[in-house]
Image 1 (tube, rainbow, N blue to C red):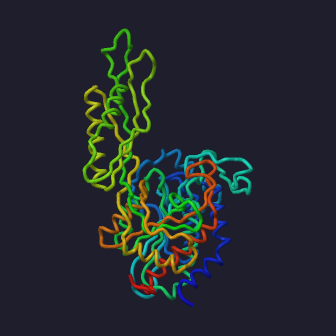
Image 2: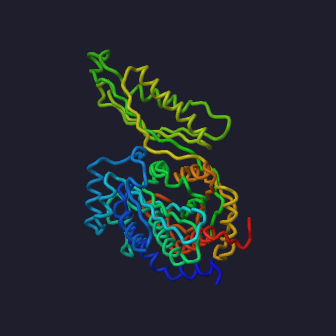
Image 3: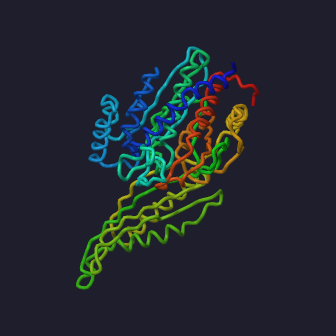
Length: 442
């Protein structure tokens, strides 16, 4: 029996378990840096499968964590995870929101290092509670008000655990090392930078990632070569002025509202870059205290994007310069926090060709899309950039799924057949890379 066939048999055996895991995780959604329940579940499952599991400080750099909730929120989330059944021995290793997990297994024979990334976090969305929403109707809807798996990361994690189990069943036929990375805080592109900064992918020869849906909106579709990841930087800028009576003593005030408004207009006037696409957006501006008070406070939330990391660095640099200049012009103080970022990039063509070849061999997809432009940001790009810089190859796939509603919608749900397709594709590609026995060499 060839390797692909063995993978298919194993994934088929685990089909119901994969669905059950996805539904279990769907019921316990956790926004970025609070994935204590999900991460502990993954860590326990991977440990029981025989992997060497590392958590917390061992797999991420705390100095590179962005957009982390306050200590009280993190403490409450950790306690709630333990109450919901997560093992304290795992939760305690993730104190402070360090909810990254990595499982490693070295096969008997030497070979390449292959890594896969699976994101775990949920969205800040209230899940629909109506009979026409399957998760609610079937009893696996969100148990946490204000949080929901509305982007398929519950499915990503479930698939990751199935891939782990399939690869372990084939351990006598594989060579090299497998690294399975379960990442927190993909939403808002906050988590990957901290994990790559820890050095966990510095020795990786092949890096794989995947996402359900997005531009592949039907079950049976798959995009093998994803290009056009936009680099991005996300900031919160807090302007701090001095309040004063607007009628009696306006000269005594320092107007943070006007400083923020000035910054907003000039941010959108940044010259574009000649080397490729660039973006700037102020998505939120909250300012002032009252009608007759000089506006003493303002919070501006913005993002920049670029076709490459270089272009985004230009946009971000100009944005920070303008914000600081506007604050200086109005003589107010400024505090700037970086709350998210991702690199730019595209798949390694050679690896994408191998992915497509395996997809064709499996004969389960009815629409294999050779190339798809991502046209947005996803922090898998940090792994991609790091691995490629060090001479390795990286590929990201979009696995199609029929959707009940769009991503981040309160009615989001996906065809669970896609779990089976993703598990078979990722397991087969990984197994082939760990044997380097492609039927057709690329």
